[in-house]
Length: 205
Image (cartoon, rainbow, N blue to C red):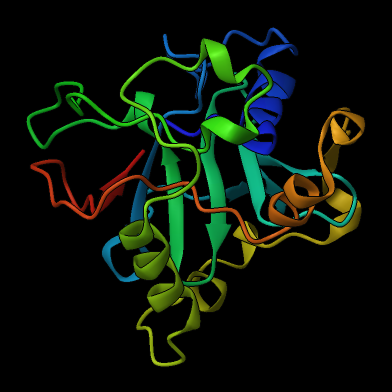
């Protein structure tokens, strides 16, 4: 469960539209995320219809990365990050192969020091990102030979900036210079390096 400003603000931005869709947030107040490498993901339905995307994309700040998106039909948040090599799906919508909702168990609440209110982040928590998480993320993002990249197979996941909505940054004035520097670094919405029984899942947070 990621509690950083960007992940929480993006999910709140979608939830506040009150479209009735599935939120990415859970009882901890953070964004519930499960991350999959691109070579283990296939979309079994079209992402566009009659030339128009079925997804609405958002970024935190006009120059923000990565993209997040929700469905135009009902406002369900589909993901919390999209990179060519991996995608972080909304964990609240992940099912096991038998169709039952996937139980992630006791998941660490990460990036507590970047939360809107660190005191409200429940235990078990980590102030930033565990070293193993960052290592796993960097390996995937920096690997030039990573197979089946999303940007080669699903152009719809990488829209033009003009087609995205912007989540405004409202928290910079409350951060120290050190926090600002870290907050501008590539986001790491994953918690551990364990495999699970869900279909194709690799990491969650």
